Amino acid sequence: MDVFLTVDVEIWCRGWTDLDSKFPDAFRRYIYGPTDRGDFGLPYQMRVLDEHGLKGVFFIEPLFSLRFGQTALDEIVGLVREGGHEVQLHLHTEWADEAHHPVLPGLTTKRQHLRYFSRDDQVTLIEKGLELMQRAGISDINAFRAGSFAFNRDTLLALAQIGIPFDSSYNAAMFGPDSGVMPGLCLVEPMDCDDVHEYPMTVYRDGTATLRHAQLTACSFAEMQGLLWQALEQGRRSFVILSHGFELLNLQKDRPDPVVVDRFNRLCAFLGRNRDSFQVRGFKGLVPKLVSDQPGPLQSPMYRTATRVLSQAYRRRFG
Ligand SMILES: [Zn+2]
Image 1 (cartoon, rainbow, N blue to C red):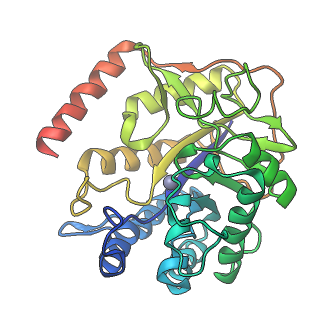
Image 2 (tube, rainbow, N blue to C red):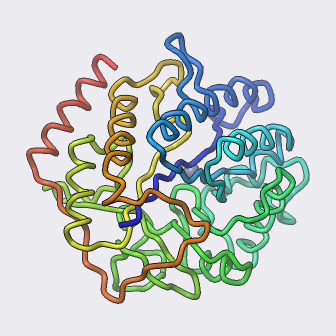
């Protein structure tokens, strides 16, 4: 089974005021993650991946650089490329109206989600993202993920028009079901949609009514491991895991979150040990393994949910 360890890389400045003065500190925290116990940002994550012989997929958000300059984007892209991991495109349209030169004529207010834009405007925004990545030295992007998974059918039509063959924006726990993509179907496995190979986020039911996605901070190691084995037993084609460049830090981004750091290390060790079963890979050179029928979300037993909820309460109190 193909496993995609995806890391969305983006920078936020706590609100939208005093951006330029806040940016340098935000950049350090979101990219390098310095704390008094060491750095836990991208270089640390790549080091752990390397220790276990794993390749990560880093979906990098470039639109922020229209405000703060190309050098910052070059630095992020350089880190990941020199680290030997895969660079792909992520887009947060929150940055579009903060650009010094407007990306879209007349765009003066903030529009949080890509799905709020017309298909033509989505083409313009995605092409701008590609252009910025190209300036940073990456010209072979073949996969895309919309910020906050907030895509719609127009996004896939835009990707098809531009020629990006893979998308990983469909999240059945978020905007997937009302995206207009494959109406009536809940996508949990790779499928061709509008001439794009859609690799949806892996989602599962945890014994409650909620559908959850397989994210490092939201899913204990025991749950993740159980879900991986279950997906393998069921003969699933792919398993898409979400993390972020800042995922190993606490909310204030000034300390590591020891529970998540431990989880990340255990997950990488597990995947490294079980490489016969789980092929951790990227989208470059990927021959899509598609399904014709969607099997439905994975199931994680209730006792694992209870254990996770307890450990999260512990993190909130002592983390
Ligand atoms: Zn994002």
